[in-house]
Length: 339
Image (cartoon, rainbow, N blue to C red; front, side, top):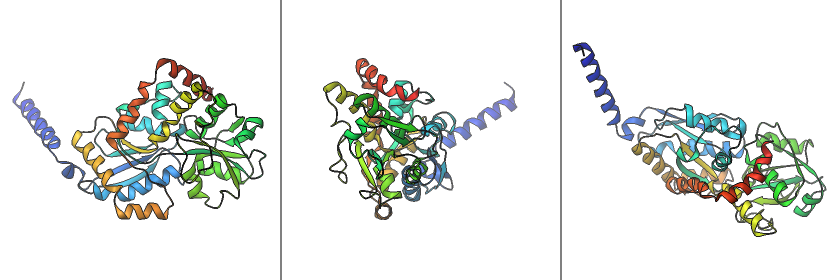
């Protein structure tokens, strides 16, 4: 090796060592973090993401600026693929995407280009209770009605819970929901109901409560909620799991509904240095106790049910524990929505 090359190698090694020796505070100071939002503006996930973006920065060592960037597409799979394959693995990207991602990966859903358990999960803002609502002009008023009569629901991307949950209910419990696909996000899909283009929509309870607080119970009927237990604000609406008619249906629906526990969750890329990941997780934990954050969430009428990054990482990994027999049964009812 020539003297010049040797000097270059030494200088490069010194630069690498210097960068790796930076503390999280030194690394983050003066930098910005991209908040990758796998959904269009104005929906509940976007509202939650921007809430986190406003408050987490001051708890991260070095106080970086958080820059929200909407990246909708394919039921948030586009954002997940970006986080897994494209974003730099340095802790300067945080993302939010579909809570069903781990199950979609396990089932081989079309468009999955990521490994969910390899993403580094930072924390959860809240569990996610989805439901189906029908406009007051629809003849479908109850779940029993939904099993008797066809009703049209506005749909978005294939991987979105907006589409997944109603079709799973069709395949397991015999409802007759017909999805009209192509809406750009839950906010637009809700407006389609109001305009009379469709009879109803499946989305999170929070999305409806935030966007249209005057709708329930005067203008809409909520016929089922997708959760492992009833939301305290919807005590009279049955869960899909409760409506199971036998142990097999209950096991299938419970496996799919586990996504409600993943909920509104945030992650960073694979390969982030351990000290930066720890800094992001502890910043998230501190944010969930911050009075200004809590007051902001209250003004937005958002519900909160935080979970640490470590707990969330374990929960995402547990999807891999589905038995092969149960996985095949879930795939039979879940995979039909991809066709």
